[in-house]
Length: 311
Ligand code: SF4
Image 1 (tube, rainbow, N blue to C red):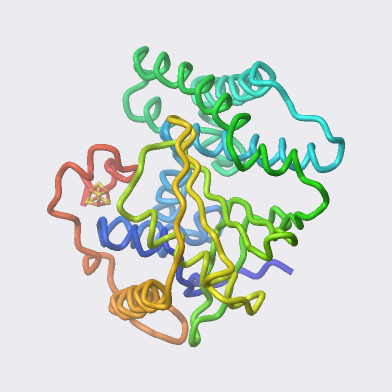
Image 2: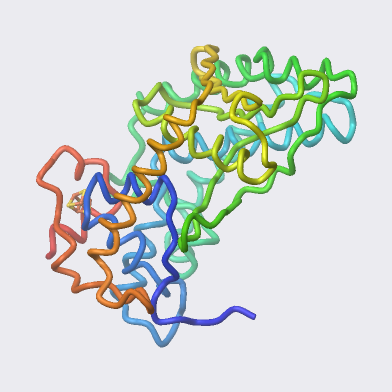
């Protein structure tokens, strides 16, 4: 049964780490002050406000979510029926979902305020009252490119040419493991085992550009597979499929890379613990102790900017 707790449970993920390194105040909003903001009573309006802002989706985030979801559906449907949707079908479905998000953001604002996890609110519309036509045009063009590249990707070619040697992992969204005493969440897009090659393959679809974090984030996924299936790192191949350009990048990891990500994890957990007033309940320190970033450029695209201008 769902239990209401005064504080969230402490856990670690790569995105939590990135949130803290980008801005401590943002980290506080996301991982502490939004907690219980989904409740409609017995909660301070401040937490409801933070939670609503947490649910804002900017165009790049929404676009990425929709594309990832449709790719997952396409692969699942191929496994069940042997059929693959066309580019036109995928583009149409994605456009339908983007339109639904636009309609929610412009016509269902009150409903979104009451139930921010059931309705969309686009960040650009929330803050600017409109979507920039150039942004809309840009993302319309991206839709064709990402689905064309997905259908031509080596990953999909391998799945559809499967001669029975692939064991596809369940498309669960949230996987977790314990490192020391900390629950670590690993949000992997897709993985499978190739019997013929005796290899585990991890795929991460990217709808944006390359980032310097990609290699380290994927090292955590490799570590997860290594631990879960008790396999050697040499048996794990990891790929980024960059859907905008159609490029594919392969990573192989050594124990040095794994030590590196575990070191990052340990330092990051220590840093996060500084924001706990009570390490057992995960009660946070005072709001003011979550410092605002001094990098003003980060605030421009931040969901929480209306709160930061108030405090
Ligand atoms: S608006 Fe700026 S200071 Fe405030 S949470 Fe966002 S990034 Fe941090």
